[in-house]
Length: 174
Image (tube, rainbow, N blue to C red; front, side, top):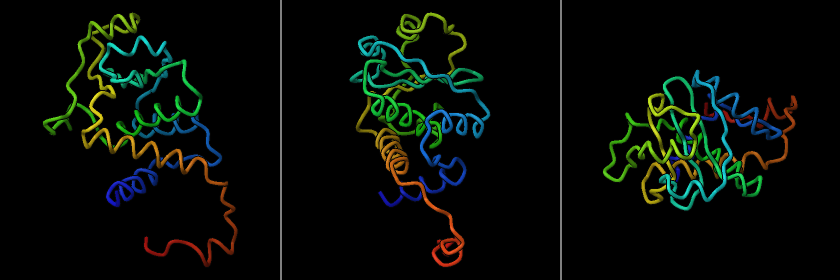
């Protein structure tokens, strides 16, 4: 986990976790950082079961010029945000078709399942689909840890950036 904590700190320097927490603000920051729009698509969780999402949690669809995160609409707000941040973790950690070097890495899902799930998306526009189905892979563990760390950071009380804190209590290792 120390490696993932370091990676989280690196990513958080590029895309800080908003304080106070606001998912829309974080989504906008990730989209700006990546230079790609991100659309959220809530769907009935039962529809996700046949798309390679394991228990029907979430799905990242990378189109040629934008991203879509599909998640179960019938879950709690906190769980939905965790699922969304997990998928953002895949994006920010560089998990995509070009990084699928692990033998257990998920392969793109059949486009017919996506076409049934989201008929407004043309199969030709889909470059890559990553579902939460292989919970044992290092990429899934990293994305899950990333989501946990973001949600923990989101729950921290807002930090008062006082002159005293900036002067005496800053992290001098940077």
